[in-house]
Image (cartoon, rainbow, N blue to C red; front, side):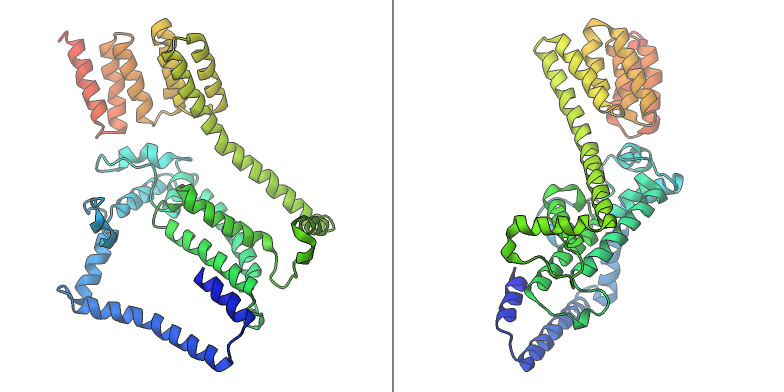
Length: 387
């Protein structure tokens, strides 16, 4: 905001060239002194310059470091377990280099790769998450999309070829500010799971989308006197006169709708599954079955609707519930939750402890450090022995 205000002020009342040069020199010197000050502080520390840099690098990149506490000291502590997640994601990529594990595969497969019981759904780095989930195919798609956006953003902000000759207008300063927001978000997403949070991702997407839709900086936008509706009409007329632009716009609209639909469907299915369990708790079994079936139809690759169906069938038709959980195992055979649910159902709903002990062995193989699976295994063995 300060930079934008300064840009508008200097555009309305430009300072003399000498003042501008002096201000620029002072700013550059101040920025250049920052690493000098950091270097001096590290050299004067107990570990010295080399020891401090090595210790900080190890705390960030070593996968065997301890998980830091979530206290105020974390603000000044570079130590984290991100390197552990990164190493695991690279192992998953090495095992599935072309197409990866599939969307969300990192969370499902991590118990087999992780050396601890830390629960995490993300690799804490967009590049690592993409490698694990989507493999080289996903990386190529992401790289192509990034290249297209980068070209549009550089043209919109006037930073493409011949950028020195372009005027530093208030609009250009604002566009460069939007570019900086998007770039900082992207860089930070490489080392953390920033893209998951709507507040940060939404702001960055707004900035990035504005740049992508602005058009080349040399193009003069429609006159402001036309108003927003007039400018929109002018843009539409301009696009319709160019079949290529109209086709590209239509394609992007279709792609946006498809992406929104793929995000909305799992949310609908999850909501229907929860509503089904709520109806079952209220004693309305018929409505619960209808909602659970609807959830499974909305998202046929999710386990939650199947789990809800099995819970509903537990009292009325236990064998039907067992068939539903067998379908869950068939659907996601490498997910330990599916095997764990089936084993628990075999033990408690069907009274088959021997079969439950055999089933839970697979869950333990997929997640060796799961306390729930280990506990269920001993319960099934004890029940099979008559204890």
